Length: 106
Image 1 (cartoon, rainbow, N blue to C red):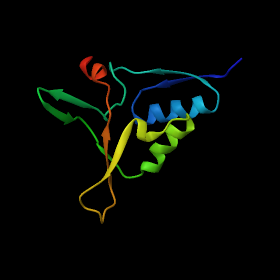
Image 2 (tube, rainbow, N blue to C red):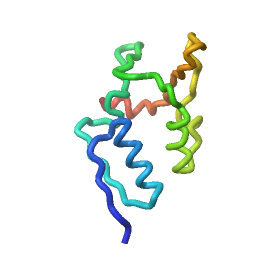
Image 3 (spheres, helix red, strand yellow):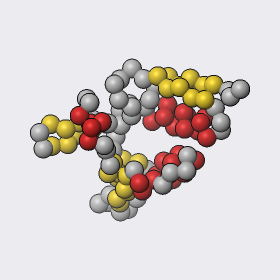
Image 4 (cartoon, rainbow, N blue to C red):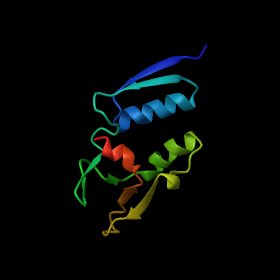
């Protein structure tokens, strides 16, 4: 029988914990109060405009890549990194490839 884990919250920390537990063989169930995952990391559209509703900056993308790789996924299949204009800070911006129908559910 598989060990089970429950994760409360589908923000970045909750999703990361759930992925790591799943990679270790746990049966994982995630509970989220919102109708969408991501917590503060989300966006919304109004007309032809897109708005970030939280952070859109990753300063340690190798940790994000690691989560995808733990599950046998290529990060580039889900989003692209772009170096910020201020190259001295070496911050990394992301452009997410959202599924349109998921955005329309909000």
